[in-house]
Every structure is written in structure tokens, then in C-alpha cells.
Image (cartoon, rainbow, N blue to C red; front, side):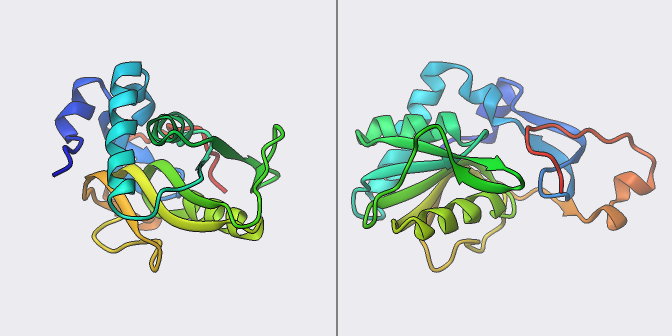
Length: 194
């Protein structure tokens, strides 16, 4: 049985925050997960990468490559690749779309797993899946440190694994009770809202 990540571990290092947040998906929530605070400790990041690698190896064939969306997926993607002893690359948002830069390239037929820190709607990871498939790669699965997308697999029919599944309420801005109550909002994270 794989040891999983706990919400208490994220809270202990300040990675689980409560308040009023505008997520990169555009949705609002009273909970925010800043996994960079958890992954800032190399020992925690290494352990999480090893745990995620073991869930990947237990689910799909061994990949040739790990690909992550920048910026959130870079550390956990790298640590997962290290644990699997495969190369790592990341896609960056350029002119509103995910793209490979910095000399990164995919080869036709490469078997890849897309690794992300937190999946809320799955938008960034789906963009990386599409990018990898357009490059001729075979996407085997998607994996994340945290799944807050709910019980359904947002990447179906691809397998999806995570170390922590959480269910926090999210609202469209026009339906947000925190907005209605006048609670000030924060926009953490690195991705601009489009």
C-alpha cells in the first residue's frame, strides 16, 4: 500500500491556506493549496516524488519521460522523474498557450506521464496532454500531488493518480458567497486568469 500525503502535512508548512481565493481556473474558493511551500523543502519534495513515482509504476508501464506544466508542476515533476530515473521537461505558457521552449522537444512514440502539483479543473494538464500528443508522444497517464477536481477523473480515459484527494467548495464568481459577503479576495499562484 502506498503511503499518501495528508492535508495536515500541507497545513503544517503553510501550504494549505484558508480565506477567499481566486484560483487560476477563475473559480473562487475558501481554501488554497500553495504546494510550492510544501515542495520548498527538498526532503519533502523528494519523498513526494518517490511516492508519486510508485503510484505511477503501479498503474501504467514505465514511462520514458515526465512532462509538467510550469510553474506549479516543475518541482514535483522533476522529483517524480528523478525517482523513476527518466528525463524531465516542462511546458510553459507562451502567448496564452502551452509550448515547449528552452530546447525541450518530444520524440514520436515517447511514452510520457504528465505530472502536476494541484489539479482543480485539469486545464493546465489537459493542455500539456494535447501538446505531448501533438508532438507524437503517447500519454500514459496524468498524476498530481493533490487532486481537488472531485471524484471523477478529469482526464478520462487516461488513468489519473494523486497523493491527496480533497474536496473543497468552489464557486463561479457570480455565485460566490464570500464575494456576496464582501470578503476581500486574494489571487495567489503564478498563472494569470484569462
